[in-house]
Length: 116
Image (cartoon, rainbow, N blue to C red; front, side, top):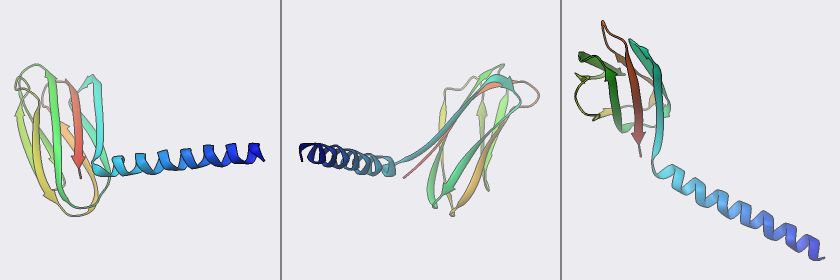
């Protein structure tokens, strides 16, 4: 009898922790990547984006030049020497790919997507 009670207690604790964790995770979705090997282009898939405002966090490290990024029909850019930047776009629900490009130089990329 004691063993069954202990198993029930453990299962209940695991379930409660899972539900609490799920609530926190749904507050804000985040996706991020780093292209540490210098490249002219880096991509980050969004997974399913439910629509609304999405925040693009992007930084490029390397020789100073103007880089561009695209996410669906949302576009932007900045200079490599600028501090890391965040941009906000409004997009419909879909799957997206954030693409950063720096021509003609290779750079290290740090990119992230946030919504929620």
